[in-house]
Image 1: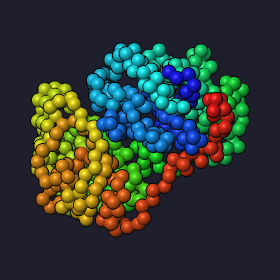
Image 2: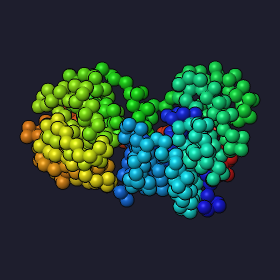
Image 3: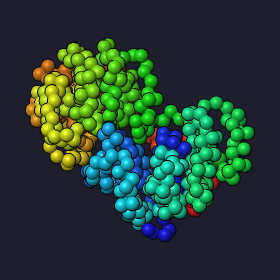
Image 4: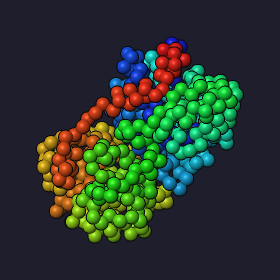
Amino acid sequence: MRHDCKFLMFQGTSSHAGKSLFVTAFCRILSDMGYRVAPFKAQNMSLNSYVTPKGEEIAIAQAIQAEACGIEPDATMNPILIKPKGDMTSQIVLFGKPYRDVRAGEYYRVSKHLWSVVTGAIDTLSRKYDVIVMEGAGSPAEINLYDRDITNMAVARHTGAGVYIVGDIERGGVFASLYGTYYLIPEKDRELIRGFIINKFRGDPELLNPGISMLEEMTGVKVMGVVPYLDIRIPSEDSLSISEKKSSGRKEIAVIRLPRISNFTDFEKLERYVSVDYIPLDGEIDGYSIIIIPGTKNTVADLIELKKSGMADKLKKLAGRVPIIGICGGYQMLGKKIIDRGVELGRGNVEIEGLGLLDTVSVFDGYSKTTVQVEREVKGNCVILDELKGEMVRGYEIHMGKTTGGKEVLEGDGARSDDGMVFGTYMHGLFLNDNVIRAILKYLGKERLIDNEDVYSRLAEEIKKYTDVDAILAETGL
C-alpha cells in the first residue's frame, strides 16, 4: 500500500442512511481540486449492478462514484458484490466475475479468505490514486458480526482512515442511532471516528442544536453537518430506495415490482419526465400506457410468483392493447418456455411455460454469466422503437441463460411480437439513451427537452453548503 495515499471513509447508522451520497460528493469535490481520486466499497449487497468496460460486474453505486471522479469504473473499486437470489442464498461476485452461491451463514465462514481480496484491492488502488474515498456497508455496529465484518471498521483500521458516521434523521431516533453506533463500536476502533453527519433533515436546523450539543458532549465527537433532504437524482444503490418511490396517480408507465427485482435504476432517468409506478404483484395495471417487466436475480422463481399472483394473466389480457416491454429477466419471461438445468432453482431440470407473448425459448444450463457493455443498432418494427430504426443505443448486459427465436429489435439482440406491441431485450440502460426517452415521451404525447444536468457538481455544491468540508479534508491531511 502506498504510504502517501490518503483515505477517507463514510459509514452509516443503517443501510440507506446516505453513505453513497457523501462518497459521491467527496469524489467530485476532490477531483475538482485536482486530486487523483477513486471510490472503494469492500463488499456491497445490491441487485442494482453495472458492467465496466472490461466486462466486470460491480455495484452501480461504485460506478456512479467513479463517474463523479472522472475515471472509468473498475472491479477493484468493489471487489466483492453480493447478489441475493432468495431462500437465504446469494451469489458472490469477486472482482467482477461470478464466484459461487452461498447461504447466509456460509458467507461468514469464507470471510477470512475474502479479507485478502479486500486488502489486495486497496493496495492496487492506493498505488494508482492520491485519495481513496471509502464507503461502509449497513451499520458498523452489528455486534453479532463484528469480528467477521470485512467492510466497515476493519477497512478503516487497515488504512488508518478517518471515519464519518452518517445518520438518517428521516427514520427518526437519529441521536440514539449515532450515540448507540458510537458506543457499540469497540474503543480501539472508536478512536477512528472523526465526526457525525445528520442527513435528510426537513425543518428548522435551530431545533436540533440542543441535541447536537448534548451528543457532542456525551461522545466527544463533533457533528460535521446537518444536510437537508436533497432532491438530486442519482441512481439508487439498493432495493430499500424503491419503497420511497410514490405514485403520482397519472398511470403512465408501470414497472412490475418483481420480488427479486434488479437494476431498477434502468428506469430512474425516465422518472424525471414521466410518472413511473412500481406495481406489486397483487396490484392493478389497467389504465397504464406502457408496462415494463424489469430484470430479476432469479427469472424462474419470479415467473412462478408472477403466475401465482395472477399478474401473468393480467399481462396476457393487455397484450396487443398496451406496449409490454421486457428487460433481461423480464425478456426471458415473455417467451414461450424457460428451461432451467439446475442454475436458477438449484434442483435439477425444470421446464416452465413463459407468458407466451414472444416466440422465444430461454435456457439456463451453466453458471457462467454474460457481462458486457454493448452498442447496438435499432432494428425497430415495434412500438416506440420503430421511429428509431437505424439509430444506435448503448447499454450493458448482465445475465445468465441464452435466449433464441423471435424477430430481433436490436442488432443481435431481443425479440418482438408480430404486431410489435410486445418486445424484449437483454440491454440494461436502454432507457438511459436520450433518443429512447424522446421516443417514449412522443408516444405518451409529452415531447420536451431532455435535461442532462451535471448532478455530481450540484451534489458537491450542496454538500459543501451544509457540511464542514474544509475540516474533513484537513483531518484527512488534504
